[in-house]
Image 1 (spheres, rainbow over the protein chains, first blue to last red):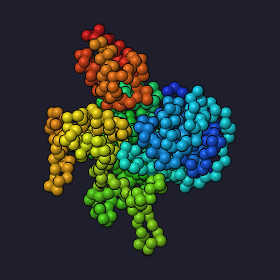
Image 2: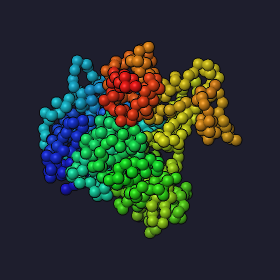
Image 3: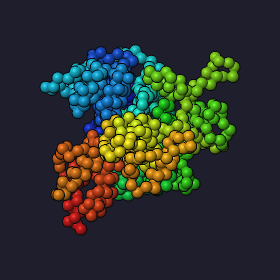
Image 4: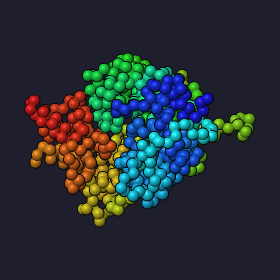
Length: 532
Length: 83
């Protein structure tokens, strides 16, 4: 019987216990070893007091333990919450407190910062830290300790509507949203993606996405469900495309899934003309538009692979896909289509008044699907705002719940969608969601600031630029590098603008608001970014 | 200033945005759990090329050549010897 995400692992392990399920940096786990180790982790967590429905954080750099953590937490009946190990400690503190996390799976390098964090947010236990002479404010269990726990599956009654994981978006700014997924929504995605992409036991997947990215569920759920192998890419490889392409060749990766920008990096700097990547049969990309000229070049370099544009906000996992036909000259000056809504989802395209638009008109995409989230963690207002409830014509007794993607699309006669942009000012940089208004809020909180503006520069890859209007008295003291330091301390690295202009005046619109368009124009034409 | 010092300074000040009192060792692993992002690596390559007048091919921007400052220095020295 398969109704929980962990059944994906356990049922494949019963079929092929000796196949490799996860590999990292030369170390690997077979399916049966993975079942043992995840059972042991679950039993250890339960012994530490974790109960069904508790949130357990995964605060780790990518490793084999990442995979063990996911399944061990699920088997304990708990909800896994991946935490970006690069977030500033302050943000981690907020997240732990907001999500009520008292137990974590982490690593030795985080012991000191977790001990500091535990001053503000009490923690009960942390797994993955070896006891040493330091006194810590929580109990610890090393992986050695975990390996001594019982290896039988814990007997926790669970149902498919139980929460399985919470992924936080926009940890950068304002109040982050915790996207709550159930076993049903996660497994439903794994099942359909396995079928759509034809993932089979011989496949070797590459886990490029960090755990706090929704794309990682393909690597961690779909791979094991199919009985395939997932190679967890060590973080250093992500920085060096020429080493990444070596890894793809050496590991014999057959299915790739990442944000588009990682593939552009591979094309431009990956030295792929000197690699044999012939085993790659499927290249899935998403998270942001893929510039068509780059896509065409990449497809020419990898003639044996099928390319697929995958679309879906983290709230619904995935909802459309588009198999890119051979060398798409016809998409030369526009975005690659995001394709049709897949057959387990229903969609509407609506105008700002929630009326369906005529075919061919643009509007916001709304999606109803079994892969959809339950809502945002402890945030009934934003959950309510995220959904459109459609009443049936017979009356109020039958309702359908559609997620408002906030994405503007247009459909052609065949139902194929083009993505036209974001409804609000949320932007994507290297696959990360960044709220421009949030960056402005941080920058304006600097003591020297009167006002600020942030905007996205539509280059490849896109980047964020910002300008600050300095209070008169600070004009001679504030430097761009000091402001950069301030931003780096208060924002995750991907949200830190790549340029900042210090100004004593802003262009204004007629009503006195900052004219962001004019600022952006200035930005483009100026030689110097620092204007006093 | 020695080449080692020039590379170290660039990485500390431009990529890590650290002050001078954080001293990186030549064999520190800069790529594992690194605050340097992929754009930083691109800037680093551009810096090495212009500072030492060498040409680094994309295929040479690998972990082997960029994991540590010592490895980068060895790459630069090799390039200079070839020229």
